[in-house]
Length: 252
Image (cartoon, rainbow, N blue to C red; front, side, top):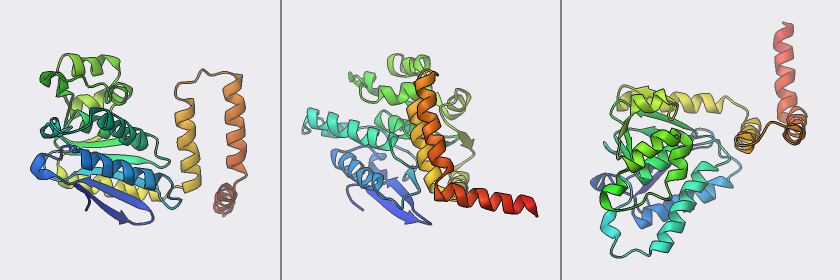
């Protein structure tokens, strides 16, 4: 374990990353941010990677930035490393899953919401408490706005509103709510099994397309791009094998 980050490689290319500073509520130290960014950067170029699962040790997912370091950190370096960490997680070429139990605050909230799929326990809450400490949550806002929507993000960041797991589910910011930690672990294992049943090449290509089309206007230029992606997908070895297997099954 390096700098409060524990990792486990499981199954066929699944990377479990655990924020492991329970004595500090998994607060993001400079060293933890750097370690997480470095691990995500190396994972992003791993051709055998199939999924990344992020979780927190103990009863708090992540309490945000460790304010004990405010006297000694380099603000500009921290800004860059935090942004890099969040962008790397959001832009991973494989599916990302956050398993959230307890509070996800500030940067911890952004970490969870930067993942594609968030599963939370009934005890999970999401909040941006920075303004209570005179801090502007600038770097985390794009990730929170993207997941929560502008209205809810503004309530969180400007009004200090805490969003519980049920409300986050209602607005589509998270995917599922489960009862407790045991159910969270079981659901995480089930999601990993589902992901491993999918064809990795198609998953990576589709993930890239989702991000490409999310903010695009539906027009002919987009059609041309998608038609090319569709053609490439249909003619890949992975697709040919899948189609042949389907036809063989259907013919029986």
